[in-house]
Amino acid sequence: MMTTPSADLHNRIDWSLLCLWLGLMTIGLIMVASASVAFAAANYHDAWYFAKRHGVYMVLGLFLSLIVVSVPMSMWQRYSGYLLVLTIALLIIVLIPGIGKKVNGSQRWLSLGIISIQVSEIAKFAAVIFFASFFSRRYQELHLGWQGFLKPLLLVGVLAMLLLAEPDFGSSVVLCGTVFAMMFIAGVRIWHFGLLVAIGVSSLGAVAVFSPYRMQRLITFLDPWADQFNAGYQLTQSLIGFGRGEWFGLGLGNSLQKLFFLPEAHTDFIFAIIAEEFGLIGAVVLLGLFALLIVRILDLSRRNLAVGRVFPALATFGIAILFAFQVFINAGVASGLLPTKGLTLPFISYGGSSLLINCVLMAFVMRAQWEMRGFAMASFAPSRRVRRTGSWQEAT
Figure 1: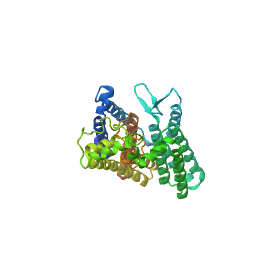
Figure 2 (figure 1 turned 90 degrees about the horizontal axis):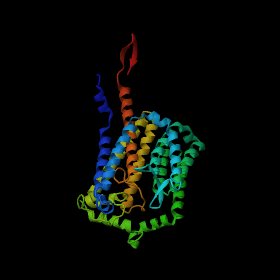
Figure 3 (figure 1 turned 30 degrees about the vertical axis):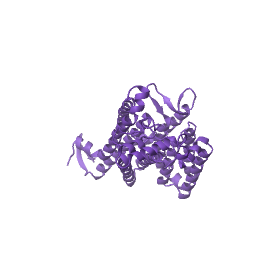
Figure 4 (figure 1 turned 45 degrees about the vertical axis):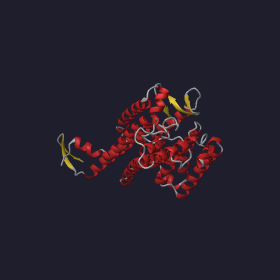
């Protein structure tokens, strides 16, 4: 039975993934508007300043997604090395005084006229694509010898050092954790992996201990109420927001903490505003949506691996782990489970670079799903004979 092009298109799109993606972005737009309205009105004389900018970034993100989803997996795999080299160059350029844009003491942004791009977000995407390609091509090296183990370790070290130089401790933790997880699933020896984790944890621990302000964050995190009007102010205000929300919240738009009590209410601490306006139930529902999205991506990774499509399997696994780390860290910081660290909540927090790269990551996942379903349809489709210029050819 022949299928029409429209039916084939419908069958190859994963509508549940698409709806989860668009649903989370819609929630993000609503919550950015709610969380930023007072701050925007006071500082920009336009209550919808951040909401409008977030909407523009959403449109740009969807436009980029159309480009990414049209690029075959084979192209991403082939040019992943060039993408990583370009990313390393950008990470170096952003550190050059006068070129990189400094905000709140961190030099992480490159100004492109009307918008600024946070290079660490690009680095996350480039690292996932490159290491998925590397591990799929160098499986024997990774599994059997030291050379295949040390090469990715050195590259991760270079990326982490450049991120720490900005400084961006949160992104370096997320990037290292994601690549380590990809190495594990790619088949690195257990004792190699244990050594890798020990090196990573000790290195990041040393960075925290020998940086006074990071050490202060760790101490404050353990007891924020001991210094609630200084170092612990942001966390205590976030916890007050959670307390106000109780079970069902104060209602959309009724948060009090966003009225200049909680700094960064529409960016890093937007989860506290969600908990205040929608309560514990609303916060759990949002985390459930993220969990469902991550599980669906992991299932796609598993299915790709089952049919020998190693590159998309590792790449989608890396993307799922990247999302999981960011959601866990952001929600953990806002709820007092983890030390204060500036990481956005994917698709929800205000932040143009984060939203654009998250859209690119989801577009990559959609492309992997598209090709996987096409592969499955081709594998199970009955062969048929097609007449071409007087000769018979086998087609599937």
